[in-house]
Length: 264
Image 1 (tube, rainbow, N blue to C red):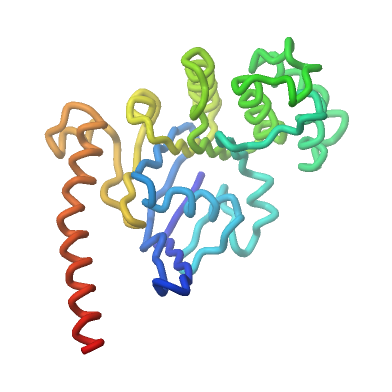
Image 2 (image 1 turned 30 degrees about the horizontal axis):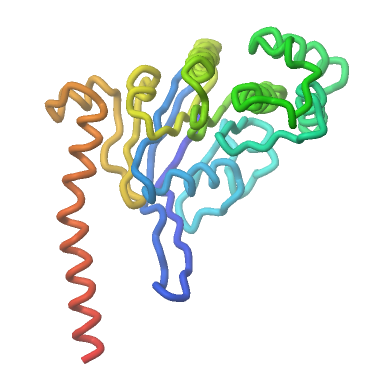
């Protein structure tokens, strides 16, 4: 599972001063669950995912992946999480098989287990026909399959999909979403970040919606739509984000006024 408790992240900007990317974010995602991470650009989703992946350290709060603290036990976290994004690189001069094998060895999978694990993954993801295709010759959909396979090769209990369908055609996107459902049914804990509300509505058991680093709402989709009287997730998302903009503008006007008074 994934546990996030009062997570905060502040960046120093020489021109604008401290910038709070995350402000006391809390949630938990469970095994056998697809947990949606939603929010507009600048909401803090990427920062949050980088902290879970141990690429960034939080400024405050804590996060645990399968019981391991992302700051105290980063190596253990990396062995218990798989990460798939639209920007995952595939080596041009390595075949699909060589790429997945390489990452399996990096994760320390025993050779006796690695080949069996890879054969299973290539069959499950329907990759046998691209086994010997070089990365330079792969389509976007092929590369995404390789990215999923390399994220799964060490059999992690937690998986993160970050805008994973971006750039895929309809058939490739549907195949990827079907794979996500299968992984959920196998008991994996899945964090699914997307801008496509229809994807989240069809896939996610629960969601959290972030705005400017803070949690607006968190819960089951049906409960949230009933609570706010909306018929679908896109309308709920639009309403919640739109309601924040007047307050944001008022806060910015107040900040400008205060800075003017201080300067005067």
